[in-house]
Length: 112
Length: 112
Image (cartoon, rainbow over all chains, first blue to last red; front, side):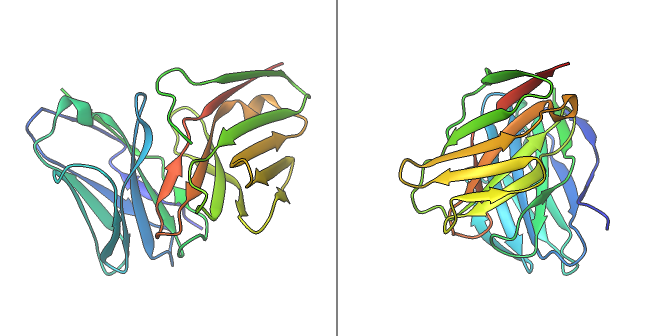
C-alpha cells in the first residue's frame, strides 16, 4: 500500500513569507501528526488532527497552524517565516491512538 | 528522552556483532513506546513497538526491552549489518492522543 506522501520535498522561502506543506496519509488512517526536526532541538511535536479536528498541539507559536480535510489529507501552514523555521517537517499517520505511526519522507524547508 | 542536540551519541560496532541502543524516557505515565530508524534524507522508519504491560518484545533481528522501574528502554539488534547504519530514536506516547515525545537519538555505525 502507498505510504505517507509529503509535498513538496524541498522548499526555499524568504524570511517573512508564508508556506503551506501537504501530507497525504496512508489510506484508512484518520490521524495525522506533524513534527519539526532540527539538529538543535531534535524531533518536536507540532500538532495532531483526527477526523478534521485538532486533538493535540505542541509548544509552538501561533504562526504554525494546520488543518485536515474530510479525506484525511492534512496541510500545515507557517506564516511570517523566520530563519529558525528552517527544518525538516515530518508528517505521520496512524489508525488511532497507540496504533503505530508511519512517517513520510518530510519536507525540507529552508528560510533565507 | 531528552534531546541531546547537535552531538548525537554514537555507537560503533563491527558487522556481525550485536548492538544495544539505550534510551531513558521521562514520563512514568507513558504507556506506548516505539523505536524508529532514520537514514539520511528519509523520514523515521518504524522498527518495533512495545506497550507498558510488557517488558520484552521480539521482532526480526530486533528485541525491545522495557524497564518501567527505572524508565529505561533498549533496542537490541542481532547480527548487525551495514544496512543498519542510521540514527535510532526512541519515542514515548503519553496517552493523550497521538503525540510522540522523542529521545535525542543515537547514531549507529557499522564497520564492515
